[in-house]
Length: 140
Image (cartoon, rainbow, N blue to C red; front, side, top):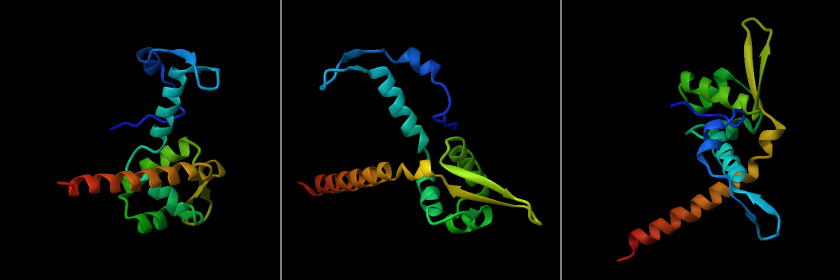
């Protein structure tokens, strides 16, 4: 399954989503098409099973590919794809060291560190949602 990165254009989505300009609570015009696309970009940025886990693992410091693979136990093929998408979206850096053999290190960018509050909010909401569902399942 191909995931679209936030850096790619959304020409098709622009055609599919109706642009509605209405007055928001603070009186300024709100372009719902732009807001919908911004939300889609944010969701696509973290799409997939492993992106949060990779970012969390790299948050403690840069790691070589082999070390990242050993810590996460993600298959090399999937890990490579996820790392490429994270790099395209400016969340990690890839540094090739001219050693023998050549080594490649990955590190979280400052931009990625700005997403921490997003992750915390999602975790908090997920915990609340999980608790609510468990309550509902226990109810007669």
